[in-house]
Image 1 (cartoon, rainbow over the protein chains, first blue to last red):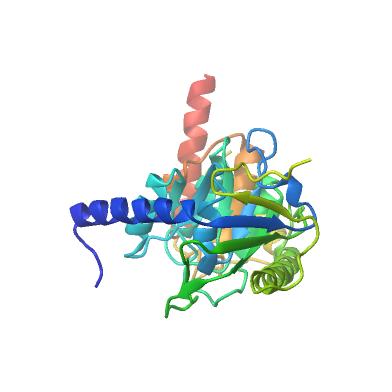
Image 2 (image 1 turned 60 degrees about the vertical axis):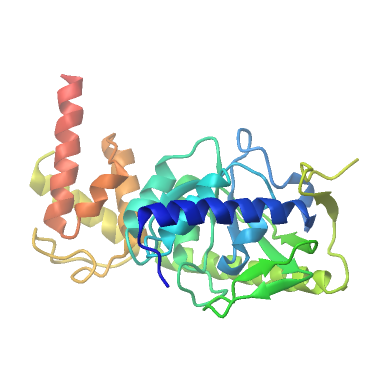
Length: 236
Length: 87
């Protein structure tokens, strides 16, 4: 059932945000990867574009970093935007299918004190396939991209196009960072496509490593451990 | 820069950005369906144009841009605004 009433969307968004905050307090976060100690970075000194698969958006919540996120203009987008705002996440509305140019330009021009977070396979997939927008954004802004693959020790999976993950309370969320990807400016289409493939491969590898780690597999290099109340920086 | 010069500038920029040739850039041509450019191409074009012409195009103004004529109108409006401020 799609919510249409603004009042109902407001209330529902408020309640969902409360539930997410409460649940996040019970979860444990582990971050690993080639340069895991540097991420998430302080946006005032080093802004990045953080890329997560659409299905693992909730893994981003626990990172507690200042981010701007692109939310689609589809019917559910308003509810998601409300939830994000209540979680302290800045929102830009638009997508590759509706209002893409406006949203992309707003992302390029704005948000000096926050990272950008994008779901490169959103809003409608195909699942785990990177679209060109995030790479174009990196090329236009000069911001480096760091992808995060997520693995959940226990999660419910929705019957959606992306098998959206709802991590269970008292579970562990494992994030594996990709190597930093810097996309040169003034690339043509072929150039952007090359970097799109690079990011996709990198993110798929990180996701596989995170999922393996979550199920008791080998720890990826440079692990750091934190909980929801920590700054998630590796200890000395 | 008059409309004709601006059109020529945009054509050159589009060809550089997309590695394609564009022969038909009159006002009525639809950017997506007629020229085959998407939001990535359009934003890249806008950003490069902003940098070159020293103007800023608010993102909200892109909402109404569907044809080459719409794009030229927006850019000419921003250029006129910038010239007015400079005067």
